[in-house]
Length: 108
Image 1 (cartoon, rainbow, N blue to C red):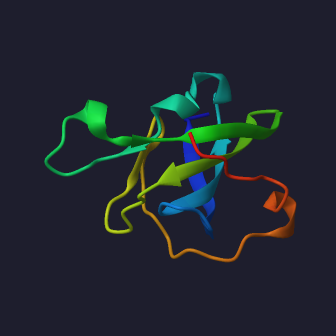
Image 2: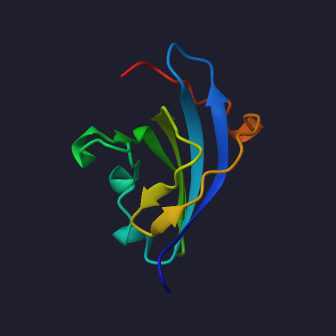
Image 3: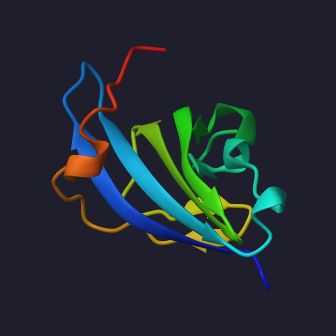
């Protein structure tokens, strides 16, 4: 099965800087998916200056499905997230669901 990723939710977090908790669902050869490769272009910047996932957590993995939660600073809603499974459009933020409420954001 081809590697596929879907943004399940984008949730604003109260913090000193703009930060969102993102839930991501991956299907297929999940072993080939490196969550550390998820980023977003910062226009006019070298790739080494682009934002990256922070405090990522594997919430679930079984039978070709993996579900992650991670924090992302300075998310640009006009640009896609870039993932090993391809670019993903960034949706409108929603309220934090109950199953993610125990995840706290700590400053890097």
